[in-house]
Image 1: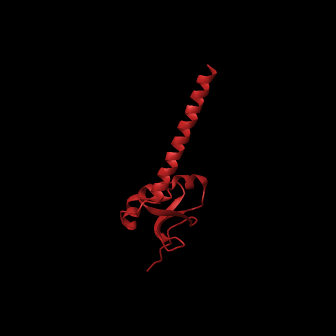
Image 2: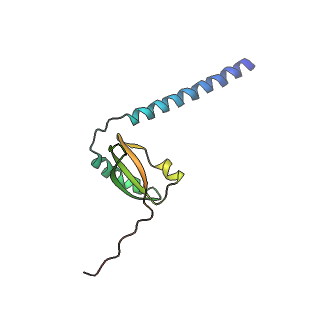
Image 3: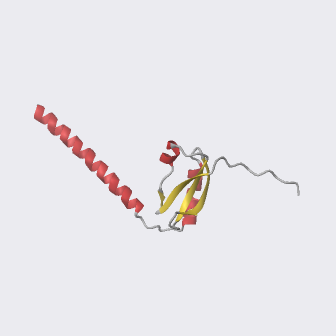
Length: 111
């Protein structure tokens, strides 16, 4: 009986390790994915879903430090919830958070 329980436990542990390994490899592959579509099209297609995340104030095209184009997600403040909700890659393009603070419309001037 104890041997069967041990085998079951080891089998479950092995299954969890394989799931974790496959998730890790799948995530790595998505980071290495070559973009198939223009970054502007990708941003336009995902803006609505990104803007629906509480705390997101805007979406734009920007650059990483190495001048690689990226999709910027502007946020009022950076939180764990936002970091979990915003993907790091969209269709092969890197996504970065930028703390912008609260964005409000400018006051109209009477021309």
